[in-house]
Length: 199
Image 1 (tube, rainbow, N blue to C red):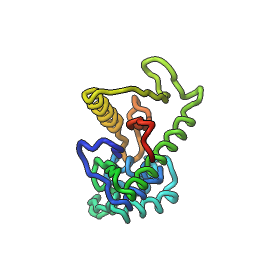
Image 2 (tube, rainbow, N blue to C red):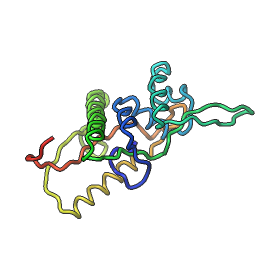
Image 3 (spheres, rainbow, N blue to C red):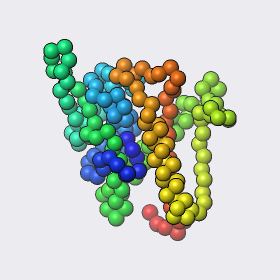
């Protein structure tokens, strides 16, 4: 799911849809279905490395708010019901003037950040982490500075490129990955840092 850059795709604007994404597993489900294409719950479970039983509730919730759809696929002379995303590129629509939208978006962002911390903790192990050099795979950082309008546009273009690059490593329905690929998660926040502003 594209979290903040709206250059193309389908906006998630309905507060019910945004609230449904306050669960990290639902974000993972949408990302996985977008990556592997129409799939069964069993195939989705394999791709996520989770038991199918634990996904049904979340899948139903995403179907209710129409972020997931059910499609029929013909295979071997029979029609199978499969899950698909409403659009391959979804992004949250931010409406800072709307209290409802703001509350829902902030819940989703909080969920993303908690998920990022859990992923970082799981990767912060001597048998997994590479912490320097061009193949570094574990990194958290913070940068604060003043940007011109053209520099801000460049930052947004670079973030858009990073998201596109991250989405390029797709899995098949069985969760298989090419031997030269490993799974990663990238979570970021870009925000004006005016300390005088109020929540």
